[in-house]
Image: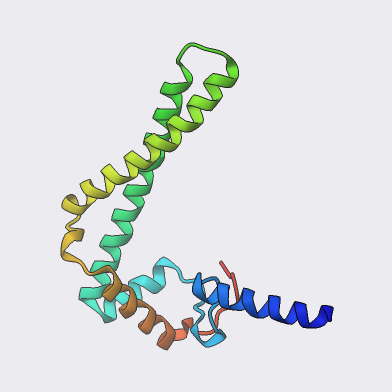
Length: 146
């Protein structure tokens, strides 16, 4: 009886994983880690998608740095408010989370115009990159290989 209950539990969890996209990719869908040199080769073979990929990468780095800087400044500001140590820590954590989110969103909008990412279709660029990488030695990576 316990075995049957475990089977139904496993089956329900499997369906839940599929619905929540938690099921790991099949081995033929996995990709090996890549380097900047691989992206440079991709850009040489596919100039439009390569330029778009580099633009998106640069914009993403700038957005991440802006979000982290904003989180740090928000945490520093809110920890400087008067009060108990626990209150300062709590307000610093909340302030850094809120400021980081706002900073990320602001920098996303800034890079949209400074890098011209509004002209780029990210999913099309990603499909072009993944297709090229699978054909050029990137297929069959190990699970969670970084």
